[in-house]
Image 1: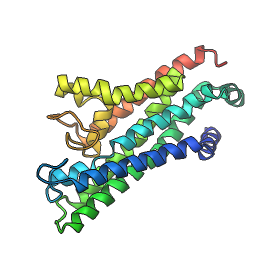
Image 2: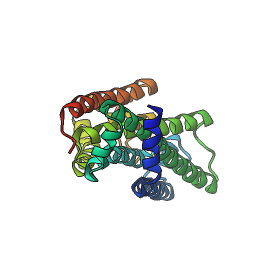
Image 3: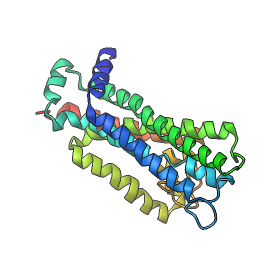
Image 4: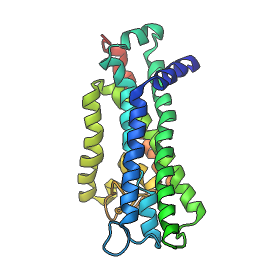
Length: 257
């Protein structure tokens, strides 16, 4: 298993797509955090940074990095079929479940970097604008650290879920479209219908781990009652395990050519 994981990590290190997605996540997050911070206050995009609500909205705007982490996870597994390297991979390691496990683990480890980049940017930008305007930091250090950990862990788990999804669907384009459609479409629709169900959706649960609210970007459904940190993390892990189990079951029976 260690050899399989090292092989997957080598593939990621030599992939320009992985670096491009990480750079895109950082740029996207920086733009959103800067716009929110510069236009905070009465009549602005978010409440004043002098308030807990305003600062929290900026710090928690790591959702785009988490979504791109999931997209990255999709490319880790579906890329094998897109570039027709799956046959070589399974010849080197005939146990397909072991290959899937290695991909899920390496996607999760790399996904942590997406969350780390996102939270480093939002925290840096948010605190910079807060201090530049002479405000007192409205959130405690412990709360800021908790949001940061939530963003990092959430992105890692979503990347693992993306790897499982990519192995299940195999079509890279279809799987990526599915990620965006679910995150920006289906979850928003369900959240508008039922706030209770919305809390149990994977991207919403991951968003609440990082302190996300209806004011953060991408916004969570207003009025959502967030799950406790541990419960939200367990929910996203459970979704990942279900996707991985379905992918493992289907991959054993399907032709890889």
